[in-house]
Amino acid sequence: MATSFALAQDSKHDPEVRTARDTDEQQFLFDSDLAMSNMNRSMLMTPTGDIDRDFVNVMVPHHQGAIDMARAEIRYGHNDELRQLAQRIVGQQEREISVLQHALSTIARAMPSGSGHAAQHTTN
Image (cartoon, rainbow, N blue to C red; front, side, top):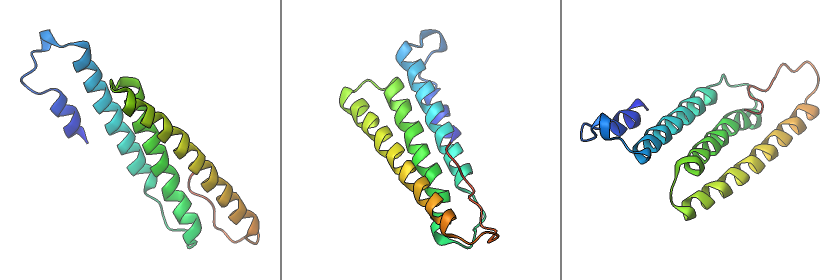
């Protein structure tokens, strides 16, 4: 992950001649790496014994990672078409997280009390 950030600091760039675009690139790479690190860390979970619950527990952080990476494109990108696509990605992923969380609450209501299966993730 840190490789992307290191690449942004390529030796061809003189630190005294950095442009706003260079700074944006470094910040974009940092934000993207952070989003991926958070996503990967959040996706680590102990299986609950319920495949549907486990699916939700890994998919919510996966979608949140996509949202965070798309927001970095919106914030630092220069191509209007890609920024618009990133905006659509944010909306779609937020809707899918909502569907996943609704399904998880439906699963929880259907389970007998005392089953011991608790959700690992909530809204990030």
